[in-house]
Picture 1: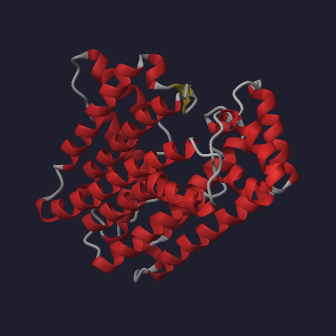
Picture 2: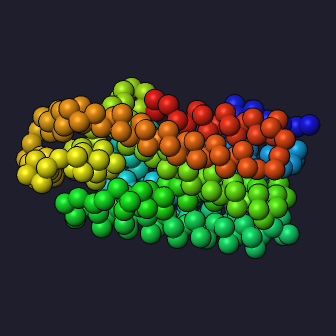
Length: 326
């Protein structure tokens, strides 16, 4: 029985991406693509694709190129997100638009979205229709989530439910799609594909909430992004959403003035906002929410009609994403 461990899947995928050569010319189109793909990152989505396929089949070969397609697509969204957010650091290195410029980054991102479809088109014929449908529905979901994120920027505050819906689209649907594509290629049943999709949504929610938490309370060396970046940008992540909900209308007004202010020094702003988080015990509240979605994800895995030995790697990946430091 060929069951791969998470680190083995990581190695398989790293070799795959290293061996995949992108066209050389024009240099400025392809260099940024190679650059962002070589920045590494956690490779969560392709690993989920391979692990999901392996749950149902000993042969993960059919899932390799679709896993690459998903990673290329994910990195395309990061290039464009970083432009929209005006972010300067990604995985501890300069973002593409800072290293080159915004026009180069937009065009390289466009090329990556097309390359993702080019790779997906290599899916075995008996699954291509289903895989394309899953991918398309995720891809449009990510765009909807990004638009909601931008809409929320112009609003003083949003409700928890609105925020959770936005991150479900922006982050969780691509995890859902990665899992469903892998399961489909492993010949899973419709019911199994659906359960793994739900698992992906809950996993994605806990993953993004963990990311929000790390932005304020992580360690810059391990996190790979500047700590307090969301605070400096005045973003409505789960932390300010929970904070504003606990404050009186008057206090909330003062808190939001600080969060949305553009004329405070970055360090002062971070420390003032974090004072609210610490005073109101927001870290614990968010950790509770993460634990809730982690438990829901575990429930979905339990419901999968499979021998536990086929779930070991997926459980390991799930547990590693919660409680992570980067």
